[in-house]
Structures are given as C-alpha cells and as structure tokens.
Image 1 (spheres, helix red, strand yellow):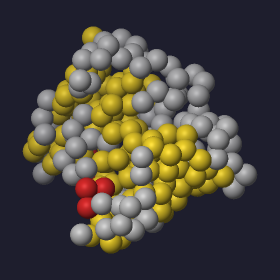
Image 2: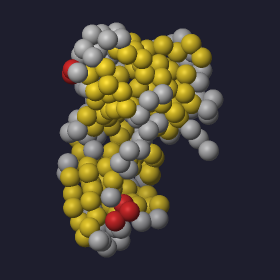
Image 3: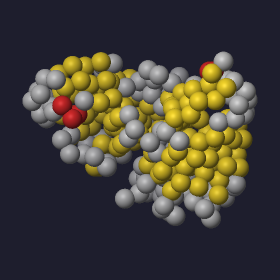
Image 4: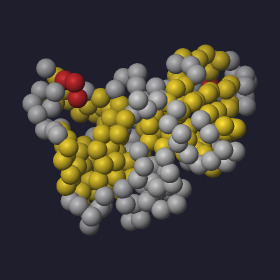
Length: 114
Length: 113
C-alpha cells in the first residue's frame, strides 16, 4: 500500500525557533511536494523537488527552505518560525514528470507557532 | 498567476441529493483536471480526473463534466451519502515538463442523513 508519512501530526513551536518537518515516502517516487492548507485558501504549494538535491520554488516559498538528500525523504525547514506560519502542512509524492501523475498525500502536520 | 476558481465554499445536501461543485480556470494550457477528496484528519486523495478530449467521465457515483469552451468543469455526486461528507478540491495541471497541480480553494460538503 502506498504510503507517505510525516514525522509529527501536531507540533507547537515558539516564534523564532527553527522548525523541521520531515516527510518520507515508500513508493520510489521522483517528485515530492510541500503544501500548506489554510481555511478558505485551499492548498498552496511551497516547494517541490523532482530529484535528489533538486528543489523548485512553488507559489509561497518565502520563509521556508527544503532539503532532499535522499530520494525517499523531503524536509521542510522554517528557519525562524513566525505566527503567520501557523498552518496545516501537507507533504505529497508523485511519480515521473507528467503533470497527469497522481499525487499521494501524507496525513499532515498541524503546526502552531506561539 | 495561474488560478483555478472553485465554488461554492461549502455545501449542505440531504442524503440522496446531487451536490454539484464547480471550477473555472484561465490558463488554456491546462490539460489535466483531477478532483481530490479529503476526509477530516487525512490528506487529500485522488477521486477522479478528466482530460479535455472528453466532455464527461463517470466513476461510480462521481461524474466530472467538462466544458472546454467555457473553461469550466464540475463534479457531480449522484445519490450522495453521509460518507461522502468531506472537502473536495478541484485542480489543474499542464501535461508537459515538471508540472505541478494548481488547486482550487476547496468545497466543504456535508451530506445530512
């Protein structure tokens, strides 16, 4: 069964802390994605990666960075967390380069920044 | 900026009703239109998808209708059930290159018993 796992379901951090969100997929997918989900705003793409050590900015990359050292693992980093980064963060993976390929999502990490 | 506009934001129907969720897009280069379904506490999952060379696609009780000239597509759920209560996202992408999905803002559907 296809699986995308995220390191935490719930996370509470303080303003200014460095935050790491980890995502692991077991499907040998080339592509991995980080989204944030906010009520009324839907899913917004933060960063994506189509290969190890490769990264591309999505629609809202400001305040975030990513790391992909291994094919199965994609990390989202908040260098200095701020309250406006309180959100649900979703990781996804997908095969190949075609935009028609299905994306498989993890269960999400609900991050609260105090 | 590429956009996909989704409506309504929320929808309540009675069991057996036919909820309809609509999406409109601007970029004529989009050529793949999936719908994702998200239950509370879960990530979204692919429900059904359509390409612009067909006007309708059915999978079980779920149907996508596609109007290329109007740049609109919609999801219909026949004989809706309380278990269909979820958030639905339409999306669009371009087939070529390292393409990403552009999502609508979502519709929260509640099917009452």
